[in-house]
Amino acid sequence: MKFYQFEEILAWQKAQDLAVLIYKEFSSVKDFGYKNQIQNAVVSISNNIAEGFDRMSDREFVRFLYISLGSCSEVKSMLYLGNRLNYLKESSSKMVIERANEVARIIRGLIKSLSPKD
Image 1 (cartoon, rainbow, N blue to C red):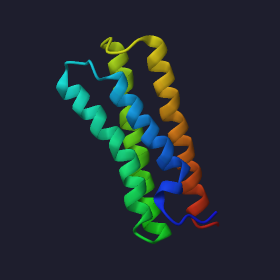
Image 2: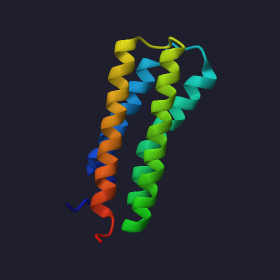
Image 3: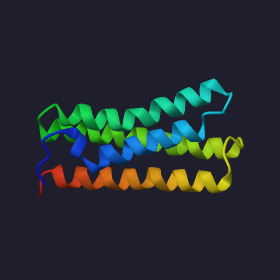
Image 4: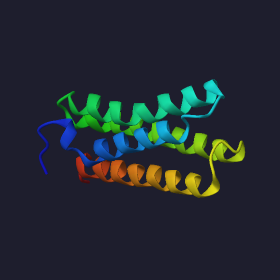
């Protein structure tokens, strides 16, 4: 599938949805260090997808997708910590982690589709 702009990419769309969800879930958290870290990480997911796409090279795009995947893992790690610190309910935690897992799966699929075939 050929994309003409990054807004068409499902991984970018889902990453944006995840960012909105994270902002909503942690809006009342007073631990500003924690909140800032998870918000920066979640925004980094879609931003790296967009930046990598506009590098106009599959190799560069894949490099940025790996960075995006790393940010997604950081978000998941922060979610586990947030759960342990009781910053969100267990049910909310599981739902948001599953959304992060979905984003990661889509990014991995995109990486696979763009990587050279052996």
